[in-house]
Image 1 (tube, one colour):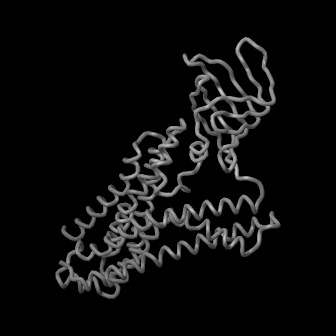
Image 2 (cartoon, rainbow, N blue to C red; image 1 turned 60 degrees about the horizontal axis):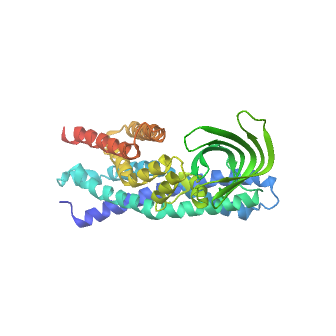
Image 3 (cartoon, helix red, strand yellow; image 1 turned 180 degrees about the horizontal axis):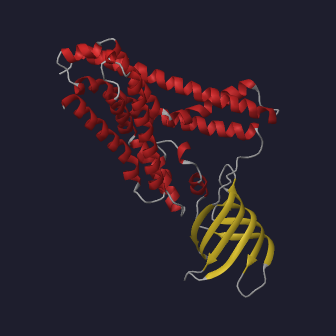
Length: 359
């Protein structure tokens, strides 16, 4: 077994490299976002340089979280290349240590980093994103509205209804461009409602500037129309929240609330499984980096090794996005879509290392 002193030394070197790589990525994202906000600040008299700097800082953690796998890949490659350059890996091999023994401390460190990123960093970044959205809506004017139409299904004492909204307020209870198809208890079509705007209250909808179209009758125009509903205001408001802005601890409950509201909870379930599988995904990045970084430094060809590692990491990232899209479309279950990239990446890394080290 590898000694404690060497284990802590390898773990420390690896942790510093990964954290440094992540901080570089964080600073780059912050700089780009700050430049964009400063460009937009000319459109608002409330925008100041200090406020834009603070707003950009609140927005950056969520974006940087998505780049964490790449930071782990680059940090791992830097750590392994430095160990190889200083001949420390050569000494470790001469002492009889296998690749699996001196990879154990880095893998342990990255699993701990992955767990902390899920249970601590993710909730903090989503909280900061919520604050940044509030500040941005106040500084640049008007409530933030969603432009993507959403479909809602409900059942009430009046029968069933399918509702389509063209936009919503930041709170998620005020909507515009509403179209409602009402059906009776037997599923027969009753009427179609077109409303310029509406508000979801406790137990009913309040629709404004409504045109009611009933088969066999002329279209009726009314200023206000009340429609019973079984939807809860809080559930519907939360159901419109993007999965990337929801804390890890809130995702299971929000998925359940979304399903009760008659909406598709797949996006929240998929995000939850992705977060659960993040430590495994980061471990896969470490193994991929090891495949291209453990060659003796003095043998040359470092640029090819680094390029190969970058390409492999990029391919794994693209494959992850493709699998996630398939999961979001319903072709794969949330568990399969969330865990399969990490499992495949680890299997690839283990296979290559077995071929390199054990023949």
